[in-house]
Image (tube, rainbow, N blue to C red; front, side, top):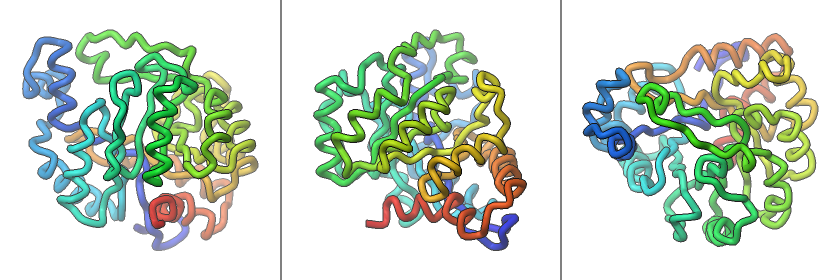
Length: 292
């Protein structure tokens, strides 16, 4: 892709793979079938996992994006992202949300497991979390941990409540866990989503913590930050090799979230970062994470 630093590989570390199973789960909660759910929120119906994977591949081709991490965004949907990765070989990394209160087996075919403590209401120090982390460590998988403010726009559109428990949202909850599992690479998305200071403290103390840059980062209004300042502070503390570019793209017909990419690259360009550092953030760090 042509970037402010010339022709540069761009890989997106945060794309939600909203499969048919995801819509089915929402439908159960609001009394609609999956196609009715899609119509109610003005989304294209995704079809099967292979069809959705092909559509994402074509969309990324259109924008010059080389790879993407696809996140199965409802527990039990691991087969969708694994099928997507198989359908378009060499293009996707497979992530899947897991609920340790209900699931005790990690699929070794995943590249990463995703934990949402506030959504499902558990502490990262729960023994059931440790059981999943033991398996992830043995499988050499990354672990994505959502911290901070958690909003699910599609639930709002459907009039569904979001009874998330912010007690479990602080990135510092991950500190002892990351120290216990130095072999696991932990990914904290959205710069901590409102716990930016804490996310920086965590990453400074634990070299196995990576931050992903995805979303509009609307939480910045809580701290009076702008995107340029956010990147400057993150680079000062974490450096360029532990930042993963992401957009938080999710559904069609919107597709890949170009404005997020443009805002982030503009902020990084305004900071005057070097070409090697830009290349690391925009794609090389994600590739390196799963190259072993």
